[in-house]
Structures are given as structure tokens and as C-alpha cells.
Image 1 (cartoon, rainbow, N blue to C red):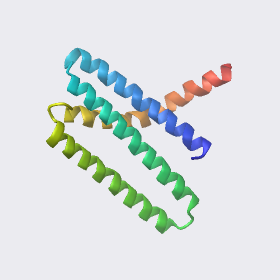
Image 2 (tube, rainbow, N blue to C red):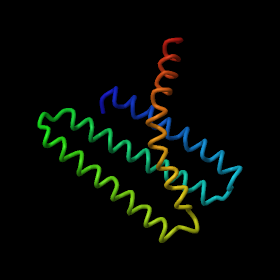
Image 3 (cartoon, helix red, strand yellow):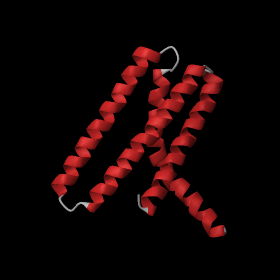
Length: 133
């Protein structure tokens, strides 16, 4: 992975973790069950893995010059990513719903969106700290 892509990955992953920690704090006061915390951690892990997949596909696509290949690669990887997410959710719901809260897993996966929204803020904080040193 190139340096810029790695930095972006770390920044978005940091946003995902920040979102998950905030969700855990809310859950601690609203619904403090072990299954909720496990669901949030599983959702966070899925969000980070999904973003890693997206960044790798994007980086590979940037090196390809044929737009048809880029489009096909993007569609196929997106379908695989979401089918795997649905399969994992169904597996968790059917096998582990008493140990892992499926709603918390979905909320944890939404950390991907929160991480994307928090990335510019995290980037500013990191670059500001680097400029101070």
C-alpha cells in the first residue's frame, strides 16, 4: 500500500474506533450488556476490514488504465464485501444471538460511515501535531 493510502486507512480506522468507543460509552449507560459490547467490537472489526478491502481495490484500480476493468473490479468487490457482511450477520443472528447482539453489530458497522466523516478532522489533528514537533 502506498504511503498516502496507508495514512488514509489509519485516519479512517481511527474514526471507526472513536465511533465505537463513543457507542460503547452510550451503551454502558443505556444498555450495559456484554452482548452489546461484543457486537460493537465485531461491527468495528467488520468496518475496518471492509475499509481495508475498499482501499486495496481503489489502489489497484488507480493503477489500471482501462475504465471497464476498474468498473467491473469495483462492482465485483463491492458485491463480495456486502454479501460477506450479510453472511456474517446471518451467521451471528442464527448461531450467536444470545452472545452477540446483532443490532450492536450493525451499529458497529456504521462506524465505517462515521470514520469517513471523521477522517478530515483526524487528519487536521495529526498534521497539526506533526507541525508542532
